[in-house]
Image 1: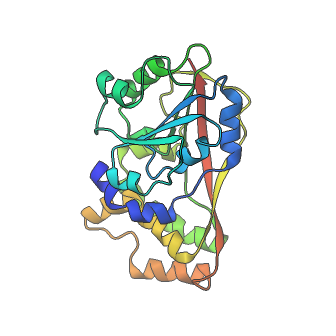
Image 2: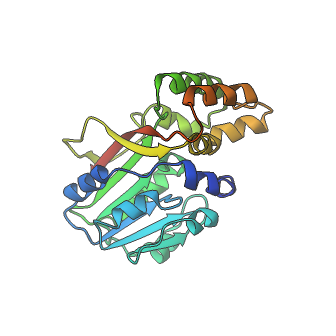
Image 3: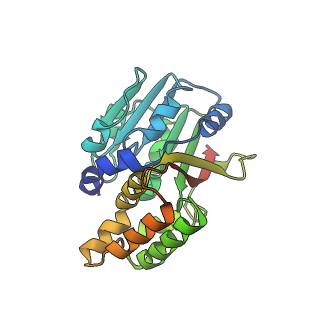
Length: 255
């Protein structure tokens, strides 16, 4: 999986959304401390950059060196590569820090790829007690317009046989994700990430789907020329900038 995401780092950088300031304001508001945060599976740093405005130090880790190379640099963000698979206590101590040293742990569109029992054990050790917070979120199928969304719905339906098992948590909007923490109340009903996009930007997002690449390995092209043509027709002029809306689904908990 690390190799797969690394190979797609360029389309990730173009097509994937950044997260709304409202999300980071919410996370800062429920955290008692604002010293250190660990962003796990940071990719090209989409969440880390937002967190850096509210926390003194952001440790942002990923298994893909190519993704980290494309991340935006900030003085208070440390990008660090980790090994794939469950992390040992020794590696976590070296890369992240000592027990009870974190005010917040986040994972944006990534926790479903992690070995959850191991990850949650690290979270329980690393968060300050009391006051530490863990927040994970994902986004589901983007929304553009009725015509574009209708074409994408057809692609989505054909993609279902090729979904990785882990992506079922995303399809269920993280409602079924194991999350052994005390829920934080008064969460917003819905948050959205938005991205102004050209048609090429939107296609870059679609080409970053892991499901698309899994289907191709099985000999199935989910974006054949006729589908691309349908998307072009639904979008309008290629230079037209549309707002692509990604519904966010958020779980926040405390120890």
